[in-house]
Amino acid sequence: MRRPLPVLALAGALCGLAGCLDALPPPGSEPAAARAAPQPKMPVPSARSRELQAYYSNVQASLLAQDLLRTDGGGRDTPYTAEMLARNFKRIALYEEYATVGGSVVAKQTASKLHRWAEPVRMSVEFGGAIPEEQKLADRRVIEAYAARMGRISGHPVRMVAQGSHANFHVFEVDEEARQALGPALKKIIPEITPGAIRTVTDMPRTSYCLVFAWDPEDDGTYAQAVAIIRAEHPDLLRLSCIHEEIAQGMGLANDSPGARPSIFNDDEEFGLLTRHDEELLRILYDRRLAPGMDAAEAMPIVREIAEERMSGAG
Image (cartoon, rainbow, N blue to C red; front, side, top):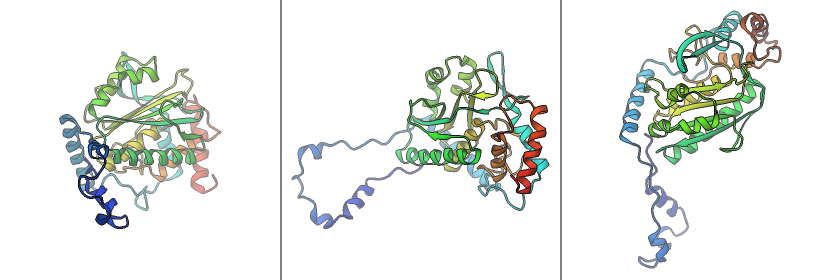
């Protein structure tokens, strides 16, 4: 957990004023209301949440020790061609990472159709549980900047809105107890959500670092709602990695592929943040020559054409 701001920070601010301690009133001369003002309480995470903080800190340290979670976006050691870009697009945008089986969401690679947003994306962020205020402020800024980046790359409108202001992409950063209590909020966002899908969130094992659900109510390839779940217990880089991957997947790049490199959409964890290759995938996904609902047979000839243009600099 990040170190909370100590009382010394307040003392330091006072000493920046003219006169510093000389200007302070003598002891006992403060108004009674000022003397009685309660100090704000720092949030106290539960024992289970503290256990997860330690666990994920060890996970991040182990990944970094293996030179994983790269943040450089790829370079000379990760070349790729137009053919590779098109092949990765097919696996990431035209397959699903999960399937619904018997009302439950299970990990199962399934051929799908092209999914993306038609309406402008209105993103909100909600924090739940014992999360330090400085973490909330920092992560809200990160999510706001990343939402703007999604809009610039895709060319599709993406903006932040206040919680409850008709948002259609909901980002929840929650600790263990707040996540386990998300059922009613999920049901309010998606009234038709199944109990199995709710359990996927509330019963997340610790091996699931984060997740996103995107809903296509008409089964026509057009998203209407999305919910991303980010664990508040993650250390900074692992939490940022979750924000990058889950929001991008909620834009329509729904799957992972072991052959995608350099890419965040690869469970080998080599890259922790969105790469230049991934930005190209997002540009292809929102190219106007493609349309929601296309299957691979319809989409791939167009995807190969776009990929060639992008790699040749013509796109």
